[in-house]
Length: 194
Ligand code: SF4
Ligand code: SF4
Image 1: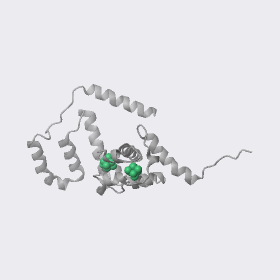
Image 2 (image 1 turned 60 degrees about the horizontal axis):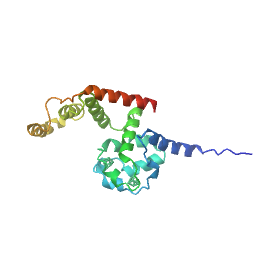
Image 3 (image 1 turned 90 degrees about the vertical axis):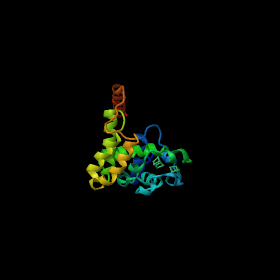
């Protein structure tokens, strides 16, 4: 008699989230290779602002703590510097996993603070429209919506950046935006298929 191997429900739940995150990550995540050494958090310039260090977040993913992981602000604080990626002894694609978690949190509308997702959506909208970010428009919109009382404090810095030619009053559009839109459409198409 052949006895089927039945996975206990709690075990299935635990591995499902890890598999989901890995499947949604571009290329391979290598998340299952994490040895919890903490090198990533120790290398991260944003660690002080994160709810959980990357190491803790990956432990939560492996424990199947989906709601907690998606509500963490950690992926939103990641600035994609890739410092952790070059130092990880296990070759975990940490920054790519952060992008995956942001996408999953957006889909589930699962976040503690709407500020970072809103900032990201305005940034992406600008890139789609102009082909690059428009720093003045991005920060003005962000501060008007979320931190209006802090706006006066930001103004001298904005003027200084403008005087040094670091930011523009008007958006600077790239040439060949049609090509960019074709690339974005293709990416959307591929995402739907995968
Ligand atoms: S550096 Fe790599 S192996 Fe170490 S905790 Fe971070 S992801 Fe895991
Ligand atoms: S890529 Fe993100 S998680 Fe990694 S060190 Fe940079 S900010 Fe931190």
